[in-house]
Length: 336
Ligand SMILES: Nc1ncnc2c1ncn2[C@@H]1O[C@H](COP(=O)(O)OP(=O)(O)OP(=O)(O)O)[C@@H](O)[C@H]1O
Ligand SMILES: [Mg+2]
Image 1 (tube, rainbow, N blue to C red):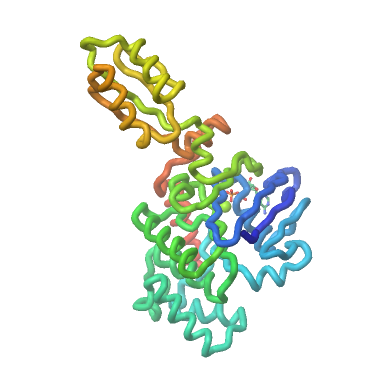
Image 2 (image 1 turned 60 degrees about the vertical axis):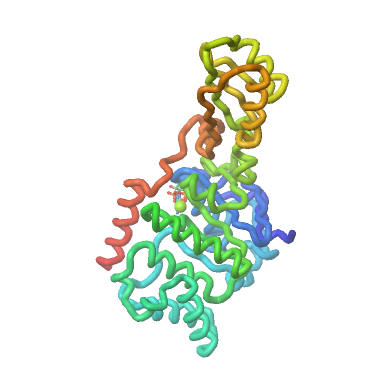
């Protein structure tokens, strides 16, 4: 598969601060790639270099095969961008915002009209086309920004924190549009997020970034496997059994990584719990052991981040801090 983005030791320093520190990653054509990291990790700075708004201090990157240092115009023609901060004009209607953007890209008027109609339908805002954005909800504005980013049919779409501060239901809705954009428009998408659920549910591959460095890269499944697998907890009846003997049987038949948790509970680490549970029942039955309870837990990306950095990432849902950040942004814009 062709590579849509390749970074080579990409670095950005602001005075003494290394915001992005020699990062290397590749985004394949047609995939949704996520940069996941906490506040201040360097996500926006990375995007700003890739979309040629910021010059790297060191290293470089290739976007659609063009060097960000040498051919920024070629790149700008081929990318769509949805910024972290809102960039639409709230005094204009949805249609007017789209029209203005199309004019900036010199899209011929007839073609522009056709594309605006198609894209407003795509994000289900056609009924709101002639309404001023001040009457839109945060989620509707985000959908309009996505539609606008697609207006000049880019090869790659950059989304900086696409669901920042939105409520969980609206976030899930935006995810659907992003998935459809990949599928129906055959688009490569690079997005940043500090929501691990967003990275996990939406991205084909993820790079975890912290203090400007990439600390892990892979599919959500691969990243979680670094934790060592799912853990199955099995509690057996205390009658007629010897937990040590049962542990040995489980070790021989299911997984070597089995521990006794208490007098009648075992913890079994396996790669894929649902696959192994029927086998555990069979082994228990043929050894005359009665199972009282069986449950399992899967590692999350938060566990991965915790293991790599010793810190927790952040809460999954639109947090109060995000809500305040977004609300302040909207207020500032309204006051302009
Ligand atoms: N123009 C600038 N001048 C000086 N420092 C900057 C500038 N832009 C970003 N930084 C600093 O660089 C670091 C990375 O910032 P960046 O905005 O890329 O992080 P981020 O991962 O996007 O965070 P957030 O989740 O808050 O959006 C931060 O410490 C930030 O304060
Ligand atoms: Mg940012």
